[in-house]
Every structure is written in C-alpha cells, then in structure tokens.
Image (cartoon, rainbow, N blue to C red):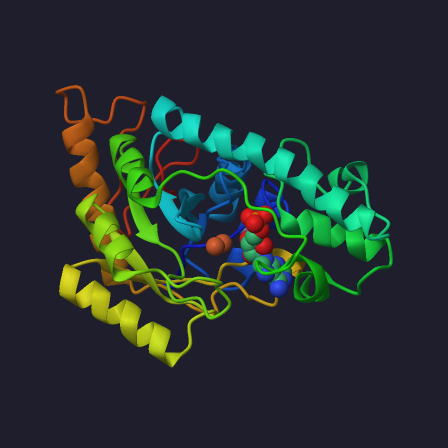
Length: 313
Ligand code: AMP
Ligand code: ZN
Ligand code: FE
Ligand code: FE
C-alpha cells in the first residue's frame, strides 16, 4: 500500500489538472493520493471522479496557509466539510489578500524595469485557482526574464527578496481548531523545511498541539536528516501521526509522486482520528451531518460516486 498525502493541481499552483494528478498518481503506482491545493477545495470533484475511474483511493485535502509573527506555516487539512463557514471565511480572506499582494509584487518588479503585469500572471492560472508566487514565476519565464520557476524564486521571489510581499493568513493554532470544528484532521506540513526564512519555535508547535494537531509531516524533500529526526521525535513525544509525502506540483517542482510516502498504519491512525472527530461533531446521530456516510476502513470496497471521502481500488 503506497500512500502520498500531499499534492497540488491547477486549482492552486500545480501544473496538472486535478484529474491528471490522480491519473499520474495511479501511473506512479500509488494506492492512495491526497489532493491538497493551497487554500482551496475547488479540485475535489474533478479528482474524485478521476479517482473512481482509476480505482485509486482519494483523500480530499487542502494546504492551509497560516502566519504568526511573520513566520509562515503550512497546515495540511483532510476530510473536513468543505462548506464549513469558519474555515471558508479564513480561506476566502487569504485568497483575496493573495490578489492584493500579487499587485504589490508585480508593481515592485515593474518599477525596477522587469516586464511583468498582473494580466500576464493571470494567464498562467486556471479559472478560480488560488493565486501564488509560482504563477508570477511562470509569467517571468514567459517574459524571458528567467528560465524556470526555480530561477524565478532564486532571483526574485524568495522570502527574503525585496520583491516579496506577504499576504493575510490565519493563525496556525486557530487553523487547527477550525479544521477540527469542520470535522477534519490536520497535519503540520514540512515543519523543518531547510529553505524556510524563520524557524518554527517550540512554543508555536506546542500551541498547535494544544489546539488539537493530529499529525506532522516527517518525510518531505525539504527536510534534511536533522529535520526528519526532529519531526519524528515530535511525533513520538506528542503522539502525533507521522506522515511522508511528495508535495507534488507537476512540472512546477522536481518533486515526484510517491518519492516520500506515508506508512499504512500511520494513515489508519489518521483515519481513526477523523472518525473520532466526526463522531463527536455530528448532530447527535454519530454522522458528520454533511452527507458523508462515514469513512471506510482501509482496504474496504467503495462504490464510485458514493460521496465518501475515499474510493478504494
Ligand atoms: P505563495 O503561497 O504564493 O507564497 O507561494 C509559495 C509556493 O511557492 C509554495 O507552494 C512552493 O511550493 C512554491 N515554491 C517555493 N519555492 C519554489 C521554487 N524554488 N520553485 C518552485 N516553486 C517554489
Ligand atoms: Zn505550492
Ligand atoms: Fe507547503
Ligand atoms: Fe504543498
């Protein structure tokens, strides 16, 4: 059982449509894939249809952008109600702030003579996608300023660049609470990323654990050996579910599907926690109250289009 719980599609800054991410996951020999676009669930329906056809397990997820004291934190959220008003409110706030922030980054680059416009950036996004720096990178490639996304980040778009502008994002501990209130589970994404500008403090991680954090990404290409050791020690000490994932972005990054995977036992623990949350958050009936017949057990047969969170081969 090969499980990859972190991928992006054109619903955010990946380069493949949701259906193609799922097809690629199947081709890569994965049994389960999660779609976790930045601050949106817009890819879920297309991915679910594709997953049913390809007979691969799909976990519906999202990578929530969070910010505290200038430190950017990414939180992977899974199996939550996509219509939950609390979570949606924060996501929408971040999405509108991402648009304003893009205007400012483009203005700053243009002021230095770099030929770029917001219209050019938008040409690299699919309709309704979460706007991010990778789309700006793509526009810089098209303008002939840089060769690829990587060079765009290295020269102009990295977090310490004079052209970098942050955007509104929810507090990370609050995000953990909101995901839980929406019936989902949360996993701290790449906490010890080597290319992160500011390190996560112990106090911040402790706050997120207190808020009900369920898991922590241990195996991720942005972690060096020390990062893996620290994340796995946090998992052990605090009873967090350790995950491993690719953070696939199609052609936008070198990350390959399945290059890191999540242990089936860990995945089962994550599902177990989702069942517990949904059992508690239901309107007394033991069901989550948003049309979900409940989570399947690992290996259980699921009918296509049944509305469940996961479809099994
Ligand atoms: P944003 O959310 O708009 O601040 O942009 C962050 C996104 O940029 C993340 O999803 C990263 O995957 C992506 N990113 C960061 N560095 C690079 C890089 N060197 N090459 C390609 N994508 C990158
Ligand atoms: Zn991304
Ligand atoms: Fe991330
Ligand atoms: Fe990601």
